[in-house]
Length: 408
Image (cartoon, rainbow, N blue to C red; front, side):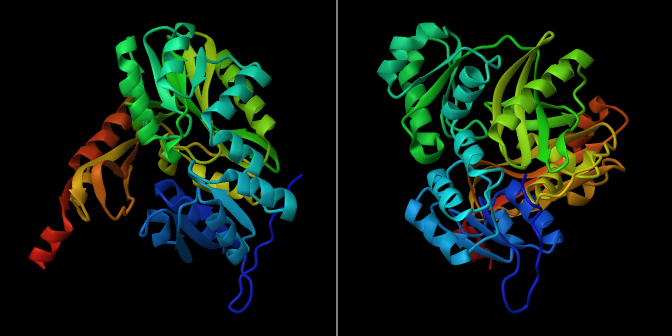
């Protein structure tokens, strides 16, 4: 049983400190919730000015895959808790320090190590826990994919074993797609690992996220979240996704089975396919999920607040659902280091129960998620349309550094 973390604030001396490994938009909300409870937050990422750094007590810029750099940072900070928020982390360092020094890792070093890697989590789910999954195999070369492709058939999906938000993911429709998809996976995956998972298509009706909280007072579930993805990246999500009672019970069984096996306290984003009355395990993240940003408006305790309560060893109690809600990702396209957001007044006039979050990302190159629109309404359909209307009202202007200097 994890002991609840006592919180100390001090002008001179040690304050209770959380080391946040990953400082994107999800990490920013986690940092805010930690600071609301008086915890000092050190936000880390590979680049300066990341969203969570803008609200944290201090920050560090480093390659978190660098074992020596990560070990040195932990030694210097002496954190009371380490919170991994991205995949590209040298989790073997966390395993060593948890074992040797009792380092407190969220939800645990074991869980972080397994879930940061699609191979490890899929092997656990399918082979150890015997949970239903799509057909799959792993490969370390294009030749190996050619040799094993009959195990899943076409069409199928190739993903890097380390990635998120659809990065490096491709759909293969014939053998001629293998080389290009292999190169894409190797170049775009986190950590540039030359290893992939190839999954057979599952004929599913819906894909959901079941946010599952493992805390001091047991396992808790949020209302199921439905979502719309484009190339593996979420564009809209809504809550609740309606499920038959027996289907929902099976979702909870699968989610609780894998969460209990991983151990530790925190929130887990469990992704599931729904095919008729059958439920198939897809993926899991041991932290807040991007589709779960809808909880910023749908619940009294967002997924970020739930994560923080759980990881501190505090009870969750009852999660109050406020009603049908939706989120819509605000995407920017272009290249530049000056990003302006216009028409916010118009966007926030789209309804009585709507909101915006601008992440404050310092630059953009290509397509990037820059914010999220939120809405609550009388029905899920109405909430989705309202969230999309809020998103579409926002106008984004991107300027290069040279253009900004000329204007100044």
